[in-house]
Length: 189
Image (cartoon, rainbow, N blue to C red):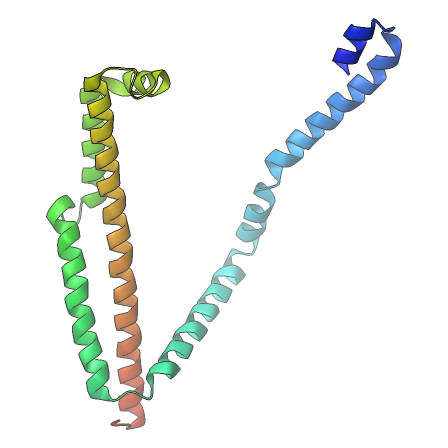
């Protein structure tokens, strides 16, 4: 609209009202856009107890369905599966512990990343290197940024392995519940 006004040298008066209307609509749309994600969050917080209870019910139903699928297997097969999962869990956890430690893995990653960035010259220098272009800022800076990227990759890999270990732990717990139910029902198969 401004381009049409400037190019054709039109009178100012007919453009003022449409410009204010478009400005108002744009402002209202921006505010709506900002508040839209907040509404589901507030709704969740208001119904927090009900939402958590529904999640628990769904989780229990899912576990029961998984247990039903495992019921045809014998106790020996289920115990063998638990032994196998214990070995897998230990292997995955030992891979994580070899690199990052046991209990303080997240803190050590944060500390290592912070010290690496500070050794590089701080966040300002890192941002400057990335904004100039990774390969236009010198070989040393490029190698340091690649080192930080490698550290980030190791950290994300450790988080992925932790997720795998948690999944194996869940499978083990489902197998243990299946064994418990089979033993309570007196089923030896």
